[in-house]
Length: 155
Length: 155
Image (cartoon, rainbow over all chains, first blue to last red; front, top):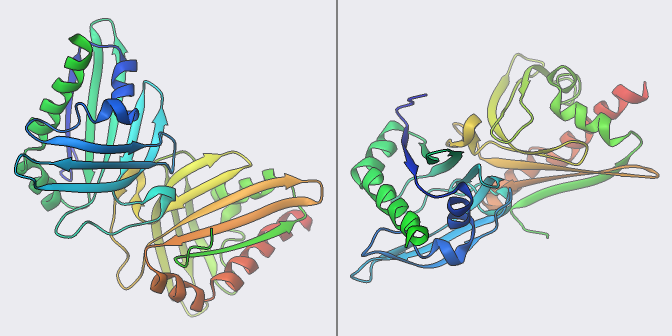
């Protein structure tokens, strides 16, 4: 399970799976938590079915930013949401962004008595890509974003 | 619908959708029709669920051959089967094969009174890739393979 081309993290968070599901699949909610401050997500488009669009536009505090359009792979309400940058909507293969790398993200939700087990697995083509993503702050970044999502529902 | 990066063909064939579905998803049937003679498919592995393996090994009459491992994207019994070479099983992105190109294939089945409407759509990254695939004999090849599949059930 510990493929060196993967990054993953797992946490139990004190909100129902339905809220986490909505955070990932409702673009109006997604823009509120998806990027750790001071970055912001300025636009999002999500069509939560296989082949649907997953698009985000992010901006940094100095006006820098990036935009990505990928494809939804699996959408099982309150259980699993998966998307990839390796495909455009409708399953068309697409190359890596200029200077970037491809990855797929799989979010598994498992509601339990104590809260929801949230597991994010991010799959890369190579170990070098995974290392680069780790050095960009994957775990802290995705963790801080998840905190923002949980805070939306915990007030 | 006529994206120049796509190739597609559509036919009405005189067999039930369930037989075409089985032809694509049961490896023991797939090896019997998948490559137009004199090529043969010597091995196949198909796990017909999102993230599952789609792997084939093909051999030509002079011993040449190729092997491809892709990922199932959609599997709706008797309706739709889609897979891609842009992802490995489990949704991991993967590069194009050496000297080759990536594509995704979407097979749509629609059973009607006169037979089953069979539509294959093959999506490429670029128009050049689609042209190359067309020049390799896409339509004749996929058509001859489909004839072999139909013949399995028509005797």
